[in-house]
Length: 301
Ligand code: ATP
Ligand code: MN
Ligand code: MN
Image 1: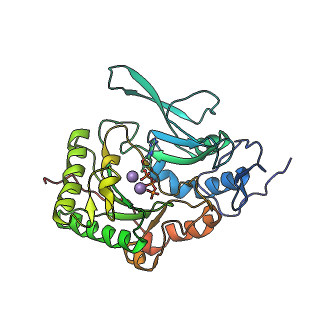
Image 2 (image 1 turned 180 degrees about the vertical axis):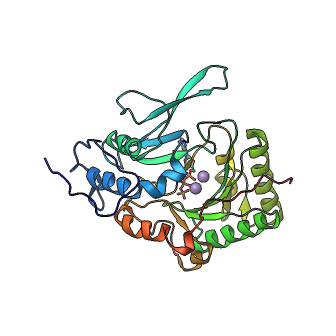
């Protein structure tokens, strides 16, 4: 058995003792990355990822046979997870209670990877107070024909409209086709206020510029437009978390970026699981300092 040498830099989040089986199994057939590569990626980025994924109920995209085969979303424990994958009871619509999953450390992340997880999606609230959301996301979903330039302009416009309301926001490349505009919020308001604000904000944009934006999920109404997916902001919904890998060709990852970088970027999938070191350097750089954090409350709108 391989014993890894001690890493010189003391990473605050080490996945002590998590055994990854079948490290050589190919998870991304187009580019050849394996389950071991994915585990190494998550262990490397754990310290920059945990501030965003830790202590949030998660949905996992598990693909035990690789990224293109039989992937499924999982939000409850079906057995087999390690002890660092924690449970939080959450009230269901029918009045019952279900246990949801969350992690709080690198071991938890790696135990999910051991179970075939590629993607981590998180709730907009944390496990210690699930009824009080603390981040809003506008997930920009462009219609097929649109190019990334349209998505970039839309993201900046949304940033500006949010700023008009006194809200600081941050940009994240989804690793797929779009950009997520992320608005951290102090806890206090409930889900209804959260969802209501998100819906009305998206609708106001689509009314002001109906040729560019739609706030309706319908694909038919999306022709040539960007769907401002505000539905990520309802109780029970999730969005992909920063630094999550994506189960897509080339093993891209969701990546925080600075607003002033956006102009020079030409797709949402420019970073991959091969870029852990670069992503860590970026996360520690001036341009991303404070990314995703702001003390601000939901304003009246
Ligand atoms: P892209 O940029 O390609 O749109 P994305 O992550 O934004 O990537 P979407 O299809 O817009 O992908 O979905 C937004 C979010 O909705 C996802 O990140 C995920 O958390 C959630 N989601 C989408 N489909 C499902 C599903 N079938 N079950 C649970 N959650 C889902
Ligand atoms: Mn999207
Ligand atoms: Mn979407």
